[in-house]
Length: 114
Length: 112
Image 1 (cartoon, rainbow over the protein chains, first blue to last red):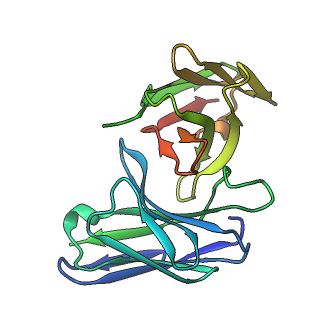
Image 2 (spheres, one colour):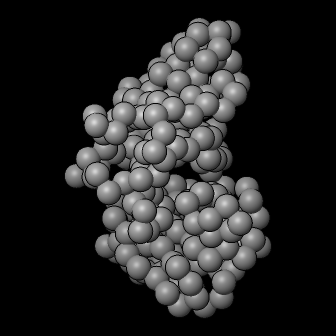
């Protein structure tokens, strides 16, 4: 998975609790992304980062925040989880020697909000 | 509003047959069109990509056909094999940025 790890890989939580998902890369890629995958919707961009401390919103950013204090780490936080945020979350990176177009995806985190 | 529409949602093909997946986009600013392959429990992986300056790109058994005027592109999997059974996603992005917009996905099952 191109030097990308996600933690945790599985998580079950309750409505209203905060949740943080971590993406860690060893490729020194500039760009990092968080997507959620739901049946019939493909993957939808939540937030992305174009450098340390530089982030921007994606298509479905409501209810999510991100932080990137180091090149290698990109954190996704659900401040108060809701059942609609039950999904599989994928981190992706780009910006290596193949340019920023090609994105490499991590293994995913399956989150269930009860 | 879904900017990239993908069809069909699922596809069953016999071994050796041709799998065809179609995508249509709305935003004429898109200029990069990749296809991703995803196996169960794994993240998507880039399969093949095309830019609008060419009408076709072939890599092994996988071919992208691109029709700029119709704003459509398609993936053809020739001589389909059971190992090709996976979910396939088309996507698109703009020149100035790198945010991918994905289609809804097609689950392909190749029967032996």
